[in-house]
Length: 475
Ligand SMILES: Cc1cc2nc3c(=O)[nH]c(=O)nc-3n(C[C@H](O)[C@H](O)[C@H](O)COP(=O)(O)OP(=O)(O)OC[C@H]3O[C@@H](n4cnc5c(N)ncnc54)[C@H](O)[C@@H]3O)c2cc1C
Ligand SMILES: NC(=O)c1ccc[n+]([C@@H]2O[C@H](COP(=O)([O-])OP(=O)(O)OC[C@H]3O[C@@H](n4cnc5c(N)ncnc54)[C@H](O)[C@@H]3O)[C@@H](O)[C@H]2O)c1
Image (cartoon, rainbow, N blue to C red; front, side, top):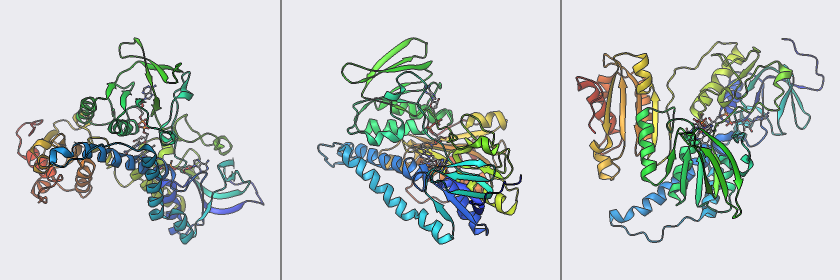
């Protein structure tokens, strides 16, 4: 498609819109490949992950874990008195840690050092298929544009939704709410539940889906739901819908919903948080002016990250597929190679470990047991409970398990799913083995340092190799 003449526009080989993990990776890689590159960021460099997503959430998860450990210290003979949460200081620490991570990542400086022009003059929107205009009026013309605009939280379209918080607003609250409803039991909602619950709030978790963490392996989802319930969280899955929110005379928020039997129900909360999804930031991007087709929640892309307009690519959360940092970075680099070299690269492999920092942690990689039973008939499953793991017993953290899903010949690992202390790190170790093509028999012979959580991998691999029928376990 030829570009109309724009005398006043600055020319680049590649313009990247959005400087989150996907856009940053795309811009730096395109520059490494020799392109002239501009990156446009409307808010803070680093995007959702470092500024309002993974990093703040992880700081809160650490604080929640400290509260739990302080409350449980008596069992170790250590008396800790008067554990209380100073919300203001928790929030200050979150901001300080975000700044510390930003200082290490140095994204702005890295653009500068690499020779990438960074423009932070507001939002970019297409004027035509080759030109974006910034809020400042600056015009950038590109041979290729990579859209790495990410997504945003959303309020449900129900009356009174403005009374609810979205996740990034939690830190703006002047005080810790005492009664909290979290709507949405995905990764975001589940992590908020652990934080609020550890900090002493009464928490209700609601979801339309029949189970929490609906994308996770069934056993993971069931274990986390049971742990939440044991911690005093009210877990309401399969609700028929949220109807409306109102302000009560006392200033509380009244949430009205239809329960799993369709009956009208309501309760009062000090805060209602909507963690109900993450649509792509397509509003006001001028996609129509560029001829880029999009859906309400995402910008569709082919396996090479091209939109329907071949010189406009899209990566990261905007595609609405994996929505994880570890996916965004790979996608950014792959799209940059396709943009600059005219290559037809795809993502290197399908393995994408992920997890959440709830109490207990959960994580997974590859096929869930349900997926494997559909796609790989005869597959086998070996589950080892943390109660068979010395380190977990030593630490008195024996709730949890590692499940390995292997092929019918007991050669390849198809998936791994864990709940419990250090579950995310355990799954990362299995992912490394899977990515290296390590066979089950080799994994079973790996020596694991004693006493470690990752030793559960060796136990599960040996169980998977030895068992005559599947689904036996060391629980
Ligand atoms: C609460 C929370 C916790 C999370 N925790 C984790 C975790 O632990 N691990 C994990 O892997 N993932 C986590 N995620 C997901 C992770 O943050 C995203 O997958 C990742 O940030 C996606 O990167 P991205 O570059 O595609 O988008 P983003 O990081 O959202 O970056 C997009 C950027 O584009 C900018 N932008 C948008 N439109 C325009 C425009 N028109 N002009 C200019 N700039 C624009 C935005 O300002 C933003 O900076 C979490 C998400 C949330 C919400
Ligand atoms: N630790 C991590 O890796 C991490 C943490 C947070 C977010 N993320 C990623 O960010 C993205 C967004 O996550 P998220 O949890 O915000 O969204 P999500 O889309 O993953 O989950 C939203 C949940 O809200 C529920 N929901 C939607 N409408 C509802 C309604 N009307 N009533 C009740 N429930 C309703 C859905 O059933 C779903 O369970 C995901 O892809 C996620 O993987 C990752």
